[in-house]
Length: 163
Image (tube, rainbow, N blue to C red; front, top):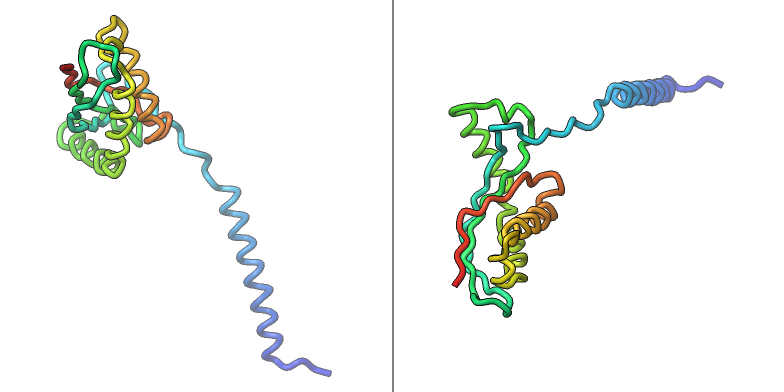
């Protein structure tokens, strides 16, 4: 009994398709690149993109001479590529803007982290000798939770006034 030609063609097509897809999968898996190399910390005189957060007035915990703090911070983030550190002029400005736009949806979460951390302090905590340094470390940690552990390089105080 002979098979019809249509079935033989379909069977041949299925076998050929499976062989091609298996070969393609093998090539893609064996030539796949590993994870990208992490971007290093900036060297001396270098810095990453900056996200300036709007100033906030925050209620402080009871137990100090002041009840409110007006605080402004700028967050330095790790660039996506190490070549960012070598950019100058318009290229640097464009890369900065691109990085800011990428993190723009996260700004409300960063502001929330800022308010949460600062409002958990008393004014006595903030005027202590190492008060700002401890606050800075806590802010880096809280903002690292939002952006990713390695994403936040530093936090800079642009304003800190208590009343």
